[in-house]
Image (cartoon, rainbow, N blue to C red; front, side):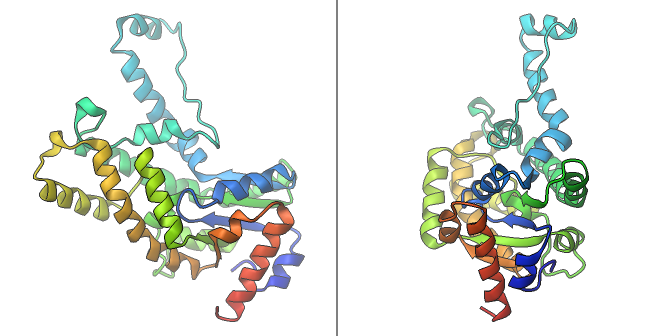
Length: 289
């Protein structure tokens, strides 16, 4: 680990931390607090995925739709209009919309084959974006003179690493350059996340074997074939199972770093609060708690 003790963390001239855990538990909330302090560089993995590694895929999907409309087709072919993704740290909708959901095309779904293809694109993009972390640490220091660095990772980090493998290339890279910090939720948080997801189901990235297994289970359970599946119903059905699938993976990754509770994170008001929270987590770790 980059910081072995609370005193090492407190005295560090350059603090570097990576936040991970389920979306909705406070990663971006904390990152925004740190960024607005003026001394912390905020590296968003999802933003990097959506702009650098999947930006062309996203934009091409917009253009493909536009080409189906004669009026827009003519303007596109004559370079009279420009179509681009307006993705931001706080609005990742272009990325999630492109990732999509499998099922009935008439309800906005994708064929399962196309869905798998886009999932694989995301996997490669996420791994690349995570491995870019050291580059952005250096860039933040040398180019912008930021003292500290926070990596706001995506909820699917646990799907692209193997925490039980001591030679995992991504975790080795991240743990040598940042302090990995798991934001752990409670059962109450889990229920709240499920309720929120039910109200607005969003596309997610899943580990391939898990996804294929759940797709087969869903078809068997409902007796439906691919084109009959309601995309939103499938992702709602899968979400609860995905949370259960991810929890032990997050816990295993936390062995490479520290963990804090989501309720502790929610109480953070400023940079000092965050730095003290990390220090207490390091103290708990040193005591085996």
